[in-house]
Structure formats: C-alpha cells, structure tokens
Image (tube, rainbow, N blue to C red):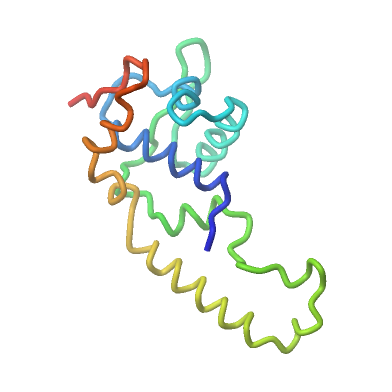
Length: 152
C-alpha cells in the first residue's frame, strides 16, 4: 500500500509536533515548511484539515500557530490514515472500467490485504513513531530554526 503525499506530509507534520509536544511556543507554518521543504499553501491545507479532525488546535492572529490537541499516545495511526486518505483501495476497477469487476476474486483478496494493513496500523499511535525523539531531533541540526529544542 502506498500512502498519498498528503497523508505522508500530514504524518510528518504530526511527528514533528509530537516529538516537541511539551514546548510552550506554538508551531508555525513557516517552521514546518522549512523543516520539510514543502510549500506553505500545502502545509496550510494539511494543518487546516488536521485541525478539523481534532488532532491539532489552531490559533489565528499575529502570534498564532498550532499545537497538538491531544497527546501523541491518543492518535491512532490506523484511524489517522483512514481519515487522511481519500481511498485505501489499492486498485481502481472503474478507471478504465474492468470487465471482471462483478466476478473478481482478486478484489476480495486485496480487500483482505487492506484490512490486515490497517489492523497493524491500529496497533500503533503517534507516540510509538516518535519514541526515538533525540534521534529524530538530531536529523534537524542543520536547520536555522531556533525553536528546535526539546523543552522539558
């Protein structure tokens, strides 16, 4: 299964925020765009969506920004991916229309594969993928962003 870039970037953003979720200062879109070399428009769309889903709180205004709305341990990866992906179907039987669709056994097998894939992801949370915070932080040492520190 291949995740869309949108989902991939959403997970990266949440990882970045989760590994520093104790920090007082709000995260800014400009910070995320520099960390991941993404367009600010794309990041803004993802942040907005994550906010609507209840994963982050957004604060408007000059001193605004965003932060996690819940603890990293409360964000289930399977559920997150279900919410960010438009479709988890590994193939599109309608583009172009496949003659075998109505009697296709392969479609059922792929459905089971997707269910198994999600079952594994359901066993993990955002906290599980940022458990190595110090190693993750060390990959950011070349950036000129002063807020890249873990605050206790």
